[in-house]
Amino acid sequence: MVCSKKMNKPELIRLVVIDNHLFFDISQKIDGRGYYVCYDLNCIDKIITRKKKFKLDFQFNKLENLDRLKDNFTKYILKMINILYLNKDIIIGVKDIMLNKNNIKHTIISSDISESSLKKLKSINNDNIDFDYIGVNRIELGKSVNKSYVVALGIKKIKDLNFKRVLSQYNILFSQE
Image (cartoon, rainbow, N blue to C red; front, side, top):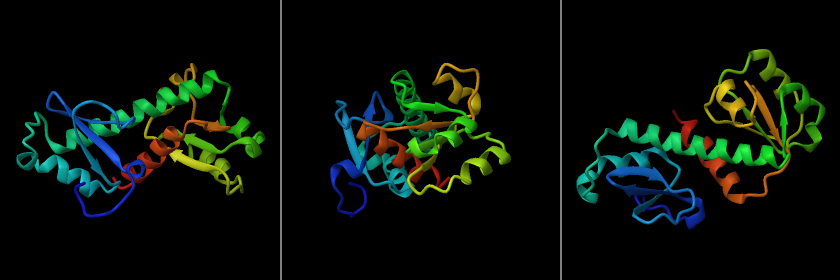
């Protein structure tokens, strides 16, 4: 633990070093030297910058490490979205989200959503819907559900608690940028 905060293991992020590269360990079970850190970017930064203390030979700077961490999060989230899509737990598009707002628990929004579409989504006055931004454009988001592009996805239910945790961690970590 980098900082002195006391937290339960599931509330922490595990970073693991494999072949001198830092990776986000979603399962918290990957073999390799692992470091548990809280959601604060300053704590992650401490792991990256204290390479002498941890005897790590990073071949890239700390910004690239954070970018790699963000990429790992994003790839995992897009993979899970695809699984939810295959299980028919996804509603695609702003119009369908609006029509099915009572069945939606999470909304994933592309980074390049128009102001008018975002305004429509935000007009859903339902406190049970979480809005998640995962930093991908409409084309990348569309690929996760086998479409040419998608500006927003509604998720009906998330059975995988790990996926909920990763969405939460992503938003806490990268909303600070």
